[in-house]
Image (cartoon, rainbow, N blue to C red; front, side):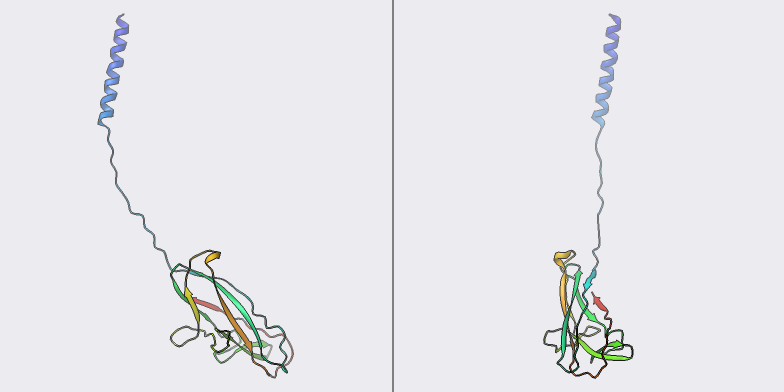
Amino acid sequence: MFKLIHTLAITSAAALALASVQAQAGTTGTSFAVTATVVNSCVVNSASAMAFGNYDVNLGAVTSTSAININCTKSDTYTIALNYGANGGSAANRIMANGTNLLDYNLFVDSGYANVWNSTCGSGMNCDGGTGAGPGVGNAQSYTVYGKIPAGQNVPAGSYSDTITVTVTF
């Protein structure tokens, strides 16, 4: 019987000691800041080729279009400029080349072919642009480039080409 009482006494003492440790437990904490900076960003997703097809020097002007698709950060304003090409063009005319033979053409902001698309944007310059809608296919913004080869150019038959660079400033 002595053994049983002794075991109960030890067990009761251990339970009291454990209860006193739990009674002394508490919590503490702190907080920390979480930050991020969203930067303005634009991506030119695509710029389709402009294929004028056949140009007959004895017929009228030939027109074509290209599409530029862009995604920019939501609410970010941007402008789109098109350079004057790889063959030494200007605002007056861009140039397609076939060796040393040159064929004039130009790119326009509007379907009426009145406003030449400039290589830089600013006051009085013809460019296009907008305000970003955010990333993703559903938010891509599309811009049409209108191209025109003037009628009656005295050039030899052959394939002519140029390369245009799209610049988005945001």
